[in-house]
Image (cartoon, rainbow, N blue to C red; front, top):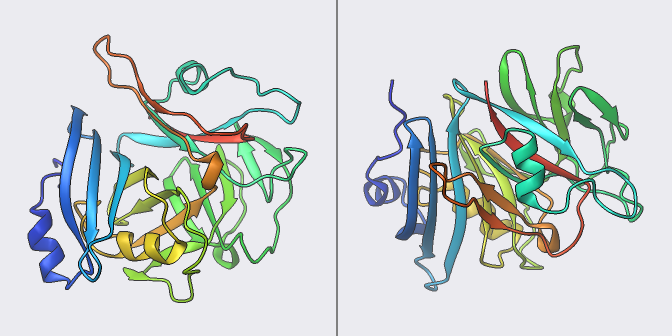
Length: 259
């Protein structure tokens, strides 16, 4: 079944009484019916604040997640996003989870099946995003059950949307560029990086209403943002990839690979 990438965004927003509404789409590249890049802008109706993001839509039917470990040394293992994602066969990707000043991962990280860091009960790390032989998963930390066969995993947070509702209590302070992953929990997924500085409360509201996505988000979780924010999309057909490099060195990257 063809993914519902082309649903009428404005109608969806109106139906849900959204505070954030679709405003514009300035770039678009559909590689297959299962893989789409768009650059979209939404606007907050209360004060006309605009928020623009790079978005890569994909399906769990055709893709899995892949964590790329950049290493803990003084220099990353890859010189740029194109090299890192390209060598791992990723069609799209963003920066990954949080890390300590010495570049050790904050929380558990599984890259190519190899484990680093340790599972933590940090206030920040409220969820887990991972891939195994059954698919792609985003779950609360307390709900996560470790098991063999997990090929890619990041502890991260905070949760932004849960059961279709924006999570309460997200911080309304410290606007910055943001990175996230979201799903309708029906096989449709999106990774995104904002070009606009937003608070976590802003980001939760954006993802909790129609506008950036073509479907109602069931759950979404924040990844490391700010100066770590990065985005990559392979535009195929001999075209150079679209890249948004991070402003600083990051420990890991979260990629999308074909099954």
